[in-house]
Length: 139
Image 1 (spheres, rainbow, N blue to C red):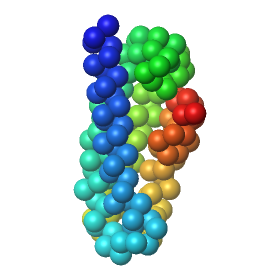
Image 2 (cartoon, one colour; image 1 turned 60 degrees about the vertical axis):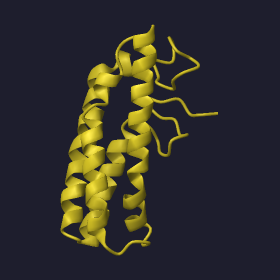
Image 3 (cartoon, rainbow, N blue to C red; image 1 turned 120 degrees about the vertical axis):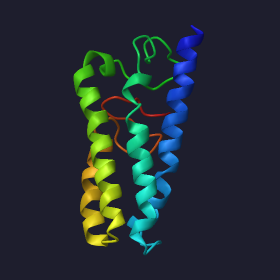
């Protein structure tokens, strides 16, 4: 049981760290930061973090088993191949976003951001409280 709680904490910590890395990317997208390259490190960090997502969703750590501790839907385990593919797509698109940011080309960054955001939506529909295919909306 402690292992399950430990995995949940690791998962929540990873998702929190990923969310914090959205900051520099959002500043570029909102026009608050004209230096596109400033978002490259954040995008690469998200790519690296995403590589660990699948391993942090072992059986028995979903909403059905831990209703007060997680928002992970049973679909993660029922549709595991699709979940893993979504996590891998996030790794790929975040790495591409980082590469594009390094060119300091805002138009290319905005184009790649759309693909990156679509990869995020592969699991949930948006910000931390949002729900989606693999996550229950926070009430």
